[in-house]
Image 1 (cartoon, helix red, strand yellow):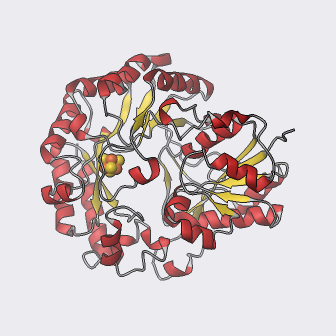
Image 2 (cartoon, protein in one colour):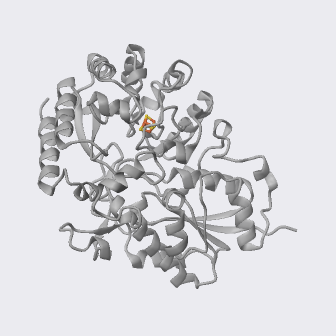
Image 3 (cartoon, rainbow, N blue to C red):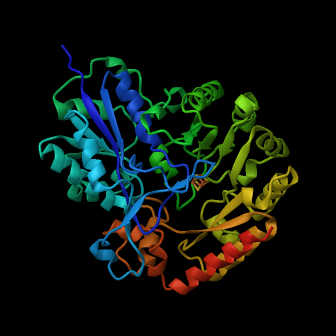
Length: 453
Ligand code: SF4
């Protein structure tokens, strides 16, 4: 005899100096929810970032929006930084009200994102404990839990910490923590993120009504840039069947009544002829037109005239072309994902099919170990001259990546012991090369260029 396991899934608060909702959906949690549902779990969901008390502030037609926020005292290591520190999402009272509105679950699953957002995760767990008592099993997973497992085990207050992204070990762990068995044993052959190529769809409908949804057509990346955690989090590259992607988009665009779709892929253009091109072709003209957004950089090397035209025809609106730095030596040193020639050609192809500068964006990273502020300034100028819009992105060291050790040594902050110093707003200030003034100047340089047509 099996009991239904009731599971409360929570997307926690963000705690940071700044946060903006750029098509953010807790997709990993929704994939896990899909497996839990298939196994017979009874699910409840609270997203701390989405307040139901007021309509989201400044919601843009492309689906992006600000988060509601409240200024709080910064954690001790950040005191002395002259910037407002905030919790993003609903008020404590609303969260407690939402918690009290669900029947006491058998277990709570809390996800996590950026390593340095952990104060928001800890606060979430503290309030779950305050509402349901210390005996309720709380399982913490997600990116912070995977990359900073020891820190999370020691300090988060969770009963257990789950490392990794698959569901193979997760479901037995839930049974072990609750002392109950899932009613449907389908999960033995129904692993979502463990076999991504044939995975079930994520449960987008769990989330509150929003103006977009996110889709992963593939997982992982065949490149291995020294500063990137794609391999650590996703393993080997694997792609879904185009037909499954098309059906997911078709179904959820209708169900959620939205036209905005954000692709979360790290490597959207791999094998484009048999993957993204047939996907876009099938969705061309869908219900008067979908609007696609690519917040992650696409590989300049793989862009062809055919891809640029297909993007334009099918409604790809927001494009980010990967470059990071225009310094050839640094490009080689960090993984050779592109060359300047490939990048220039890619931007020209998009501009030739009619994309304006502001639709074709590129992130330039500042603070890669060994990089000078002068190299960053030259990269910003290079992107502008290529015809793209440049966005400055401050380097955030990620534990266990090849660039990590050097990044730790370069900083005057204890980056390894304290994940708060991995914050991209802060890490740079621990390097001798940068002051707040240097960072501001680089940001203004990029912003001024963006204003030009
Ligand atoms: S190409 Fe992009 S996703 Fe792939 S490893 Fe490099 S930074 Fe990561």
